[in-house]
Length: 452
Image (cartoon, rainbow, N blue to C red; front, top):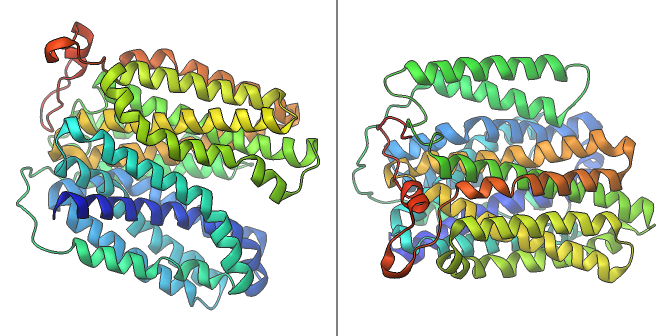
């Protein structure tokens, strides 16, 4: 499969998943009325999907490393399209929830592959631009998703929301089918490790997304399962996570930044919604209009990131973008007028769009192509857990007031700035790297012991 088709497939898969989440959010009231469902039932249409995706992403990435990224992408897209069509004809809320679980399994298969295919198709020094195109497309999907979902739900009903992506999923899934070059790895699947990691992540996401009396015991389950997982990974001969992937400074730092920044971003958006609608008295549409600069700048900033990476390196690019996001949250904490609100949202979009490209570039580039699926799974896991943490934190902080929550998220983003020091420096004249960059640029081999 040539590079253009690979990029098109990667973008299509990422956009399809991004659209699925945003359009469903708008269509949920229509779904609830049509199926006479409870609020709890409607909530589980999203929660069940999220739990499955978060728990399977890394294992799905390992499947791609072993059996081929294109195969996993094709299987994920075809299965996702078929499950979406089935949801569109579901007779009751129980069927919708069950089929959303199935949809989540296939979404988990295709998401790491969208990054793994790019890592296999492009040399490391040309990887930033495809990632920027992918990020801009995700931003566009996030911006247009509520509008598309609202229009479909209003004119054609909620079922049309799920049927929207069926044909694109089938078309790109079929395009990715075909013979694939033999894999250079025979990495083990580590089923016990995959199960332990799935329990850890699913318990964590469930405790954070549905807080209540059961949250603490579920968090305890997550902590115990996580500790057992770490112990298992250190002792098994063929671990799920290649030794050194997490231990590599740049990869761990980039993943931490993605979690922190996505938590700050989505926590800020959650709290700011209450500022706009309850504090300033705006209706939902007026609130959406005020936030348009966020989507615009996220789409515009991503293509600029490759040039920044070449000139300044991941360390300074990510650090500066993190500062912009923190300033955006701080600006919104005090903004009341249209210009101030627009500036705050624009700073958020610029910072997040740039960090998405820069940090993802570090995660995917720092590992060998034979471990690209695991790297993609880790990146997607970070971007799934971060928003859950952010929204849960915003919910807990609302008693202190939404503007207080915005100060907290600005501080969270600012706290991530020093972490960017662990990311690679830029190349200096002659293509040489400084001492820190040489150490950061050491590739992580799937079977090698962790490097100091």
